[in-house]
Amino acid sequence: GGVLTWVALRGQPLVLGDVRGTVFARNVYREIYEGVRSELAVPLFAGQRLVGVLNLESEAVDAFRPESVRFVSYLGSLI
Image (tube, rainbow, N blue to C red; front, side, top):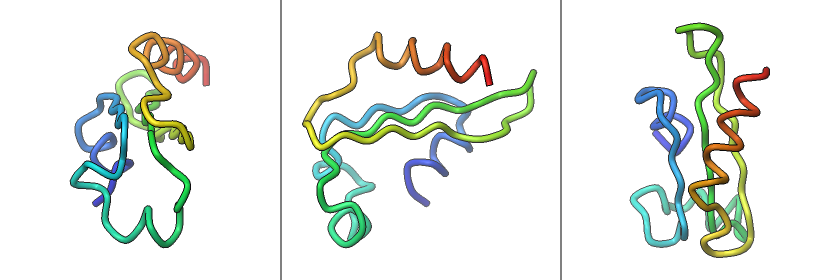
């Protein structure tokens, strides 16, 4: 499983400052998302039920800060 699976199973956000240094950095980032350096994934809930995962990626290292997690989580709560 990748980042989205991790977030869906745990029901909590995940921020990767540099995907190249993570357990998720398999061939996926090299072959498909070559330019991705950082990632933010946030679970989306309808009440207590998980309905999806919102995933943001950036070509910049450390693009997402704690306030990014709060903001994206808030946006996700509006969906």
